[in-house]
Image 1 (cartoon, each protein chain N blue to C red):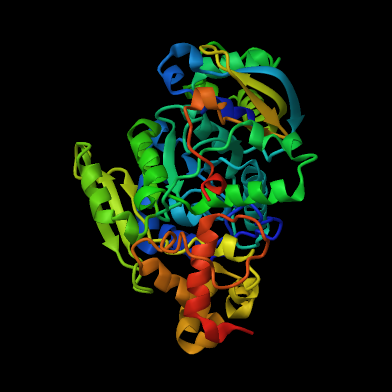
Image 2 (cartoon, chains in turn yellow, green):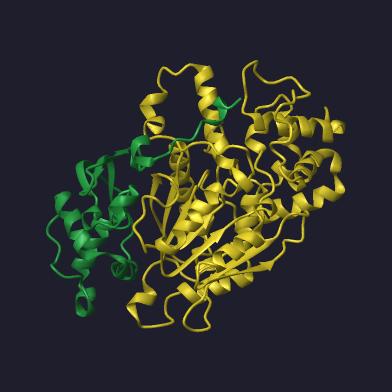
Length: 378
Length: 137
């Protein structure tokens, strides 16, 4: 049982709260087959060659709370077969960078203090405010992790500017302007534009240039991202291969994918895969009057380790539908072709939290959920 | 951000990436902070192969560190504890808390505040002209 990084210091006003997809990402990285493959690739001691013992640089684009990078940093022995990796995170939201720095540091020191661990040396070298891999030097990344904004939306939110992330720019901002800005930053955590792929496509385009010779990238997609099409595109690059490695076997709409670079030998090179994220609406839903429907309940109580969380939530779907059927409603939403844009011009059925224009997606999910899970009222 | 970061980053402007002068970015007005990290000789030995030595020499010089050897330590030099300790201090213990990273090609300055460097570009450099979601309603 591997501990989930502590994110109790993180404010989720502008940051994606670790959710099912985050835990599935951890699940896959720590799975026996994946950690074996990564350990074979990156562990020390297999060769006297200096280049092979060089510490891997592990980069996560769009870290959010930092739960994934913190997990990978703390569990580097389990995942990479070595105690020393360097981690670096990027996010377009400065708050997420601050949160990630703290999450990763806490995760590393918690692991160092646990009695049964030999000295973990992993160091988080920095959290950078930036767009995907744009600050990084070509050929520098050994492991790239990306849990994208994958939800199909009519429009892709623009990138924030340097000024919007200047801590001094928040001073004197009205609460309504602040709310708009928070909503905007939250939209960046899920809104993926056409097919939910616009941001992911930019990241995929950067992969051949940004990865080192031994580089590997892990990207999470959802079914609506059309993973089969994505795989074909990557095969079209020449020298790259893509395959699906498995299915999580839980809710319909979730599966895993691997994309590999073809090496000169049979040894597969970079891999991208994903357990499919279905639902990134949680941050917005927290703002609704029905927020309590999505908080509390058995899932929060069980959030002691990601595995328990994950297993318990699966169990709960079956055994206590009354408590968390809203999650089932979300999963159902995820199966619809364009779940976040179907009610664009429709007035939400429930009252809005504030009498001002809201991002449309809140309204659409919101009204769907209100319709799908009436028994949860109260 | 730890000083080693400077060895892995470059200008965020696409056109600059292919130019030699966009790496390393140059520190200006850097305020440094020392955060002690346990010295692990084998760790720093495994870090050295990842380092662009010329880039690091430039960075060390800009931050006022004593000159690094002209060539990257190899072989016997990797057993010299003082060399490893110096590199450990520079790369892993020294943090840049405030200041700027400046591109030698386009001159753009990336601000560092509370240890977080901001690589987002102003809109005229980033070519990002999308409409904010809340303005679409």
